[in-house]
View 1 (tube, one colour):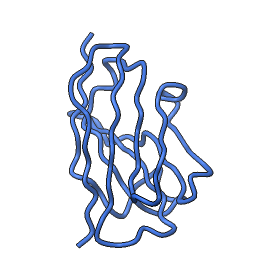
View 2 (cartoon, helix red, strand yellow):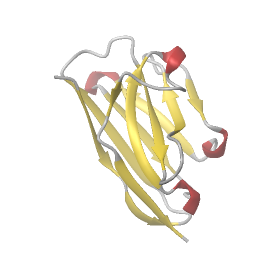
View 3 (spheres, one colour):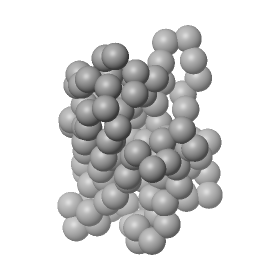
View 4 (cartoon, helix red, strand yellow):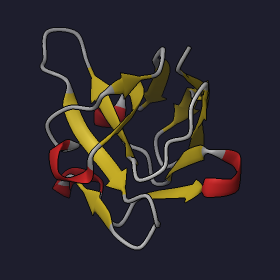
Length: 121
């Protein structure tokens, strides 16, 4: 059974930092890119960031560039999202995903359970 298990998140004041983690298990994600999406009530799920299998390339939505950093530890099959200078508009449920690099901005093949991030003003 394939699982993406997320951890991290929580409540932070504006300007603060949080780190999300996503550990993959149940199969080898050889060649899979991994990434993060987020969703707020009444809005579509939004692409946030992605990283290739090798870690050699990353992609970010414009609104988080310079503030968020995605990274991965292949040995641990884990991807991280370091979120700095958080803003209230970053408040959302964040989802980890794994899939093919060329499609990950649109959707992934496997999904985590979701983690709430709340940024207070």
